[in-house]
Image (cartoon, rainbow, N blue to C red; front, top):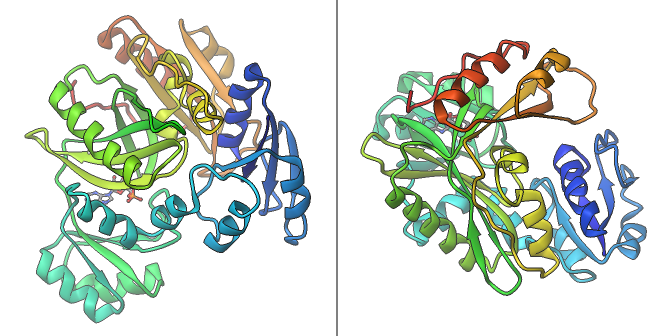
Length: 370
Ligand code: AMP
């Protein structure tokens, strides 16, 4: 099976690494001119002339990046199977569509309004009550295209700084922690769920993901499973889907956003789960049985961003697994991650602190259950 991947970054690289044991081959289509996968057959298509050659090589198509033109993905669907479908991309690349789907399926979200002017933004901030978060409806990721309004009078500055014709304005959630649920749906409709992860973001960028959470009520996991199952079934989805949520003090969950792909908050599964998110995505899209999603032991993923750390010292930590993306250093760029595994959460936290000291600019690791 030759798997075509739209995008050629680290997620595609890790898909390929998971697919080689299954004798999969990989062809990447890169439209940025800066592929970093460093593996498989990479076709650079900055002039948009290589799509037919790409499609001629591959048996089916998946992607590692959802900000793709929907008509392009629909055109590909007319020739080869695409998993997840263009409908998943259409919904997930637009925060307004995403929230409308959450509403329709009864998945709770922060209160929100859609606005298309600075005046409407100010009115929405008044109505929802500050602070509020304004986000561009499309094209935002890793906290980009966002602004927090502490006062409705901030609307003019926020509107100019985001510089987008349509924004979603959300009530600021006083969450206890950010969490994500990752699930996989096979071609036959079978669904499996990973244990939820606690995610620590700084300036909108993920720094740590830890799973399983020691204090997670099974009822909360069941609720998250129910939400993501509703999304998977509604979209007739095939592959890995990620749903990011805020958890309140009473355990309640509010959906923030979803990603129709393998996700940074699931990298812990590479070493910490029986079957990684990457392998399960490949199993799903090829119509193979899905693998066990259980955690082997408490695991924490530490992102390496901007500059690489002392890799030799990191590798000296017991049960530490370094995954480098073979990318050059640049501020804000995701370069690698480390999966740390320990028999208990207490031992894991000690190891996370030791590891963070070896990673440049790593924020202090702080988790809700400490
Ligand atoms: P997003 O791009 O929507 O995932 O937002 C990036 C980060 O901003 C999230 O991971 C949160 O830390 C924070 N954030 C986003 N929306 C809200 C909200 N409504 N209330 C509080 N924090 C938020």
